[in-house]
Amino acid sequence: CEFLVDKNLQFYFLEMNTRLQVEHPVSEYITGIDIVEQMINVAAGQKLPFTQKDIGIDGWAIEARVYAEDPFKGFLPQIGTLNNYRAPFPNDPRVRSDSGVLEGSEISVHYDPMICKLIVHGKDRNDALSLMRDSLDSYVIHGLNHNIPFLRSVLDHPDFKSGNYTTKFIEEKYPGGFSMDYIEVNDSDYQFLVGTAASIYCQLRHDLESIPELKVEMTGGEGKSFTVDIDEEKQQYTVNGKALSVATNYNIGDFVFESTVDGSAAICQVISNPNAHELVLQYKGIKHTFQLRTPSEDELHDIVPKPEVIDMERVLLAPMPGNVFSINVKVGQRVVAGQEACVIEAMKMQNIFYVQKDGIVKNVYVKQGDAVASEQRIFEIE
Image 1 (tube, one colour):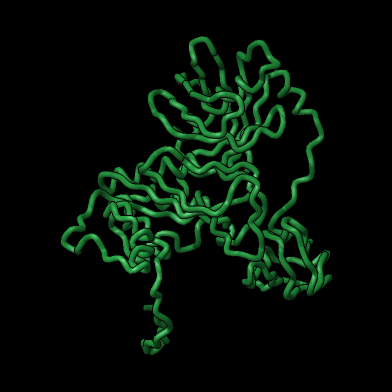
Image 2 (cartoon, helix red, strand yellow):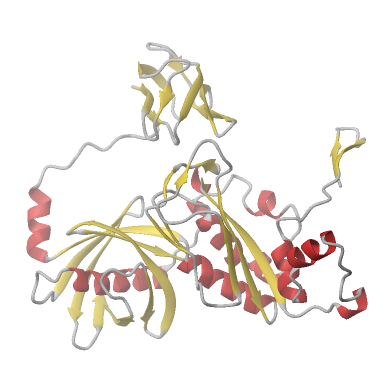
């Protein structure tokens, strides 16, 4: 049953769901009973072939709902095409992907942005948690943002791993909303990432006979630089003076691969390789962008004019396609951070956006009722 409760703790009946719940695969895994099959048999007049005492519990099952939502933007719904889509471990009976999408499917503004219910079954809770991490790391969803970074963060949280949590877990552990501030990337992670990226890059740069050295920059807000000395024959990559043994099972064209750096193994993904010098990898659910160049290429890069960097606190871009419900700023208006700027309707929800920095409105690019595309400029502050 579902109820509504008001501020005076008065309960009001809402509805009774006499139907299959979305979490039913968890029950099916631990009981070994196909609940849907039994429902069909009962509807056909058959009796249940077992009693309650016949039903036991075997192992542990966990379900994660994978959504086309951007957890770094308040879980705003995302739309787009699933350019590359591979469910994890399709031949493993311990992993179940209940989904209605395929590669090439469109996530549109007209429907709920759920991509999949991902369910795993382990011999105990720790085994199930480990399998869920590997499954999320192996889940290929390219073409739009999704909530796997958040799911991976939850799975790695010490309180969640220990089972010490309540239904207030999210508001207590992510009080300011989910952000990169809650993602811990330590020196060992960076060594793993840079060593792995350099190894993959050496395979991709088949136009070069050998690559003894690379200059590596991690962009996208990380702002870190590394020098990597490479001995491909020994599979040794020296990152800022630290010698690392790096081995991967990556083959050109793969999305998912395993990398082992100094004995530590992890499942990674190649998200994109848009040009000869850029590589985007996913590690523990987070995308990391690398710029990799040989020393001679790096010298040329230093003198090439760079594109203008947009101050995202002064320019609001539509985070998803939708319709402008209201625009609450105008050219010449003095605004302050936190002031409501506009409301965009998408997926039957009204999303409110606020001014990020004090200033004077320089341009307003839309009006009420306009349809906007993702990343389209809404207004700009000077």
